[in-house]
Length: 211
Image (cartoon, rainbow, N blue to C red; front, side):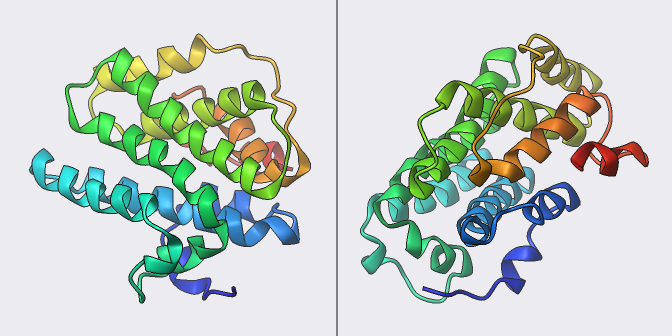
């Protein structure tokens, strides 16, 4: 089912918009849906003044994913984009859980679970696209991107160092990903270049890295 891309593209940060440009045509819509959903969850958590209120909003999304897509409310752009995922959308519950980890006390364990939740979103996308079961590579790439992106958004130097240290402890070899997950490959390459020490698109070398 076609959906309007413009409202979703407006949710994406520049690194994610760049990565989406490398998506194969059949994968573009589902990849945009994943990135837009991730961005929507990020906004909920980053704008949270009261963790309990943010948890309520995250729970709303979790409940939608557990319901049948046919029963989802109309008029929500992200849900409209996820309709085509069908039952595979249930796999995005782990993504919601990952973002919820940032509402508690910052720690290496919480950041690790957060990164695992975001990586699970890419595994769900791979399943939806029939892109193969190479979960180890998807997890490494997804977690690496998640940690580098987190570090770039953390204001506290100590918390930023925790995220950067987790990224540095990763296996540094390239992650060989299926063609359908080319946007993740781009994001992971940018993450490895940044090492959690600078924004993903900092400097002219970032575009060369994406290429």
